[in-house]
Length: 296
Image 1: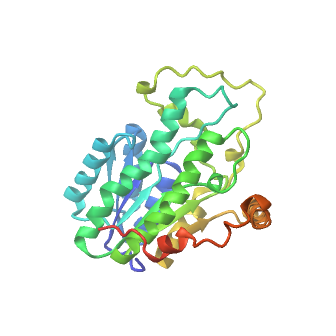
Image 2 (image 1 turned 135 degrees about the vertical axis):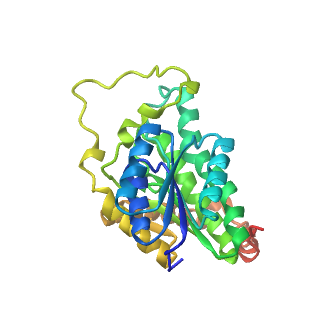
Image 3 (image 1 turned 90 degrees about the vertical axis):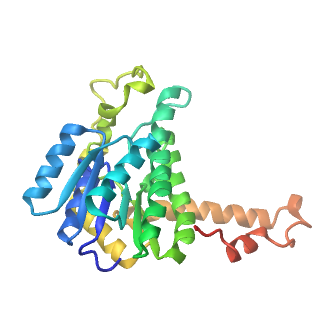
């Protein structure tokens, strides 16, 4: 998708933050954009703001945790614009806590939004993009938390590691259909993700977690980079069909340290007496790599 002019983008979590910045960046490239978000008032303001900048934009209130609701948003996009070429599965919530103290209902909420919301977006839109034969692209928002896991952020990291892994597989499946996949992995960006509970649906029950103390340090998100360069980097990556989109090069050493530990563990396995005699068996990974499952 090197030429974006005249194409159509669908963006979840599009009423604010990185989602809205991507909508503006793609709109400046000549794309029409459909914003999908759970916040109706913010969505209306976002659409008006884009239109004031001469960007063709529409909005649709939806909940990415409900596949039927996301499918309705997809159908409305087709009705308004005729096709979809680019899908940004961007909606996400931030949450974490101490082992054993993170409520079960919050586990459901984080998994439903951050993981299943991306799955639903892929399952619904991949056939729609493939059907018009013009190619397309997915941008799935993960995080640097999909590569390194700081203590206390395990629920969030679990979903973001999953988005990275799933997207790597989907990229191989969709490439033969001229559909690219990029994984957006930003570090700290100045958004409202630290205020995610403003959008926690009542269906997950009351918010019974212990409020943070009054003297708790401010969220590092507040000192993050602005959303505009992140969105500009996404546009570059889509045009270049890049799999991984990083925005914070300073995290490279932390990722390298994690992989160094993994490589050391492989070396330990190669020298392990317990595994002697099994190391020369044919690897099933070779067959999987040679014969990948391909999206039809």
